[in-house]
Image (cartoon, rainbow, N blue to C red; front, side, top):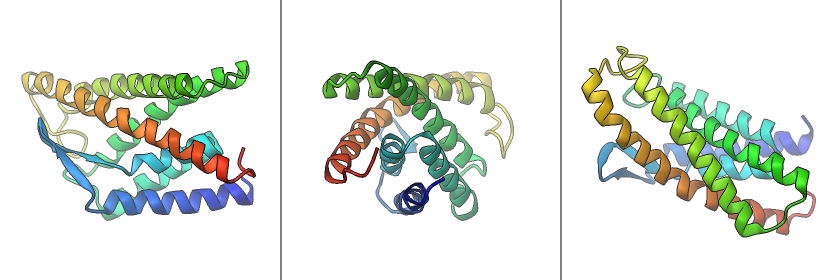
Length: 186
């Protein structure tokens, strides 16, 4: 990892952790135990600016910080967050690879594809993980019954869709803006 990548990891990880621990969060009106936050935006931005390794490393550092500082209601909650962000980055990354191979340059279409694939991957992975894991007792899940899980998964799905629908476009816009301002970036 070069100096530029190390500096990016340090700066973006610090920003992500600060935003994650900040009071900037809003409970989802349909599921007040889920919170809309903006901490994933710097991860998406760094992923698009500096690549897969940097984005994943920032997500991992954030997860470790949360496990130590503020795991939330479920001690393994930060691991759920990690699965959500990594699955979203996978969707974005697959589109990024396809776009780079074809030298595609339509910004509106690129932003739409990133958002669509990132949202779909995140939503599917998190629906499956929640369906499978919530039945286990803490610290893995909440020991929920099947009927409760079936009621919970649609709420998680709505949450993951709506969160990705603002996180990805904002992260993409920030990456494009930073890239224009700093020509030394990829």
